[in-house]
Length: 234
Image 1 (tube, rainbow, N blue to C red):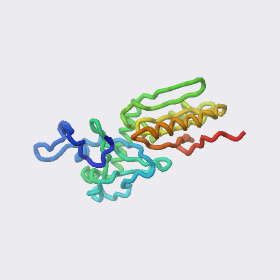
Image 2 (cartoon, rainbow, N blue to C red):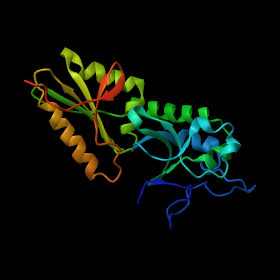
Image 3 (tube, one colour):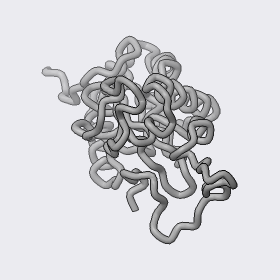
Image 4 (cartoon, rainbow, N blue to C red):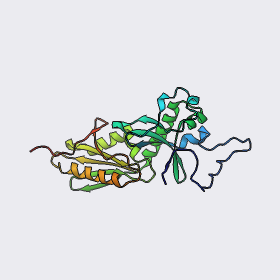
């Protein structure tokens, strides 16, 4: 089952969430209709380059998005796409124009709430560390679904740079799938590590049903830039 459903309906046969049906007045307080219910459940998610959607800032007013069932998106780093997911039990729904109209909020409010939630989650989420000699890898693979999107947070890029960039090491980053953010230290005297890291990222993305990107990036001054795994001449 694709956890990124294009509409707000639960999977067929799923029981409704408690409190998600219409109340006594006939008004639904489900997150798809009520902003106060949706606000704490929104998170940004990274999507592959070329993912289609409605650019969030192109919506002049909330009501201008009514009837638009395309996911609302922002530009991410290096042609990746940022979408916005409403977390639900067992599945997630990508926020779309109809949601924005129902919530009657400006696009910036949606974006700010989602990134605020991601930052709060990331502050509590653990990192896994693997070391083999001088080689060092940090990964985020909590299973919560927001791991790859952590790279969008300045505090995360600062942490990875400070932790892995000592001694002139390049900081390599991979976002092969939604549930994995991978970063490694490439030392000047260990150029074999780059191709090994790239092979792992490629294979993981190739095998995942929620893949994001096959590429390896490098973290430079807090920004992702393309990385070439080619060994230096010599």
